Image (cartoon, rainbow, N blue to C red; front, side, top):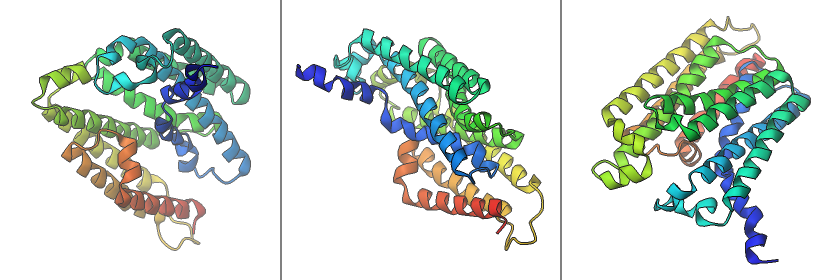
Amino acid sequence: MSSGARHLPLALLRTARPRQWVKNTLVVAAPAAAGELDSVSTVLRLVVVFALFTTAASAVYLINDARDADADRAHPVKCRRPVAAGDVPVPLAYATGTALAATAVIGAAVLCNAMTSALLTAYLSVQLAYCIWLKHVLVVDMAVVTTGFLMRAMIGGVALGIPLSRWFLITTGFGALFMVAAKRYSEAVQMAGAEAGRGATRALLNEYTTGYLRFVWQLAAGVAVLGYCLWALESGGVADSALLPWRQLSVIAFILAVLRYAVFADRGAAGAPEDVVLRDRALAVIGLVWAAMYALAVADL
């Protein structure tokens, strides 16, 4: 067996972007918000949903890299992607991506329900349309990426038959838009004054101004905070057994998390949301405090 054949499975795995899989943990968002993470069967069901969404997302990455192989070869960083570098043949990337997409949709229908399968089909359709065309359409490109995050947050509730609160959808949607716009803003700031680099990295950034992108992420952050506050205050009174109004107090941690993330956005250092979330200890601590407050609220302690 040649060395290329031995390394092919690893190259395919790299093309599926394992580092991006952390985003798919959002599938627990709706069940967690509804306080439904209290049984082993629910957790196991969510593990299945996570695997299905990861399969669908990996399919999109494979097809995207196969489609953009020629352009990526001319890019100083993207040229190292396995498909662009020739480690994964373009036809194989297309075939594997198609197989993964079919597996995710059929698996969702068999293991979950028809609505979960329909949502995954919608996700794949929108993301593939983004790869082909929508990523070149001003503003729509940010809306599509935001929709991808929102679908991740919705699918856990859809799979478990949990009603989705309007405030949950508003907070999640605008929170995602906040991170997407902050990422675009960071990319624009880092490439300011380097026109050649701008064109090579993301042509559409030439159409955005840093002022506009700053406006978008600030607006989105404000709406997300407002949505969360309204949800927390609308959720009802405090149980007699509860020590403190934890759900309402969690607003403080939520706002601190948004403010902390905004520090990186303002510096132009929020290019990779998963890196910000995983590497900043203060943000991680705030997140743990928020999770603890929310868990106490769900448990009525």
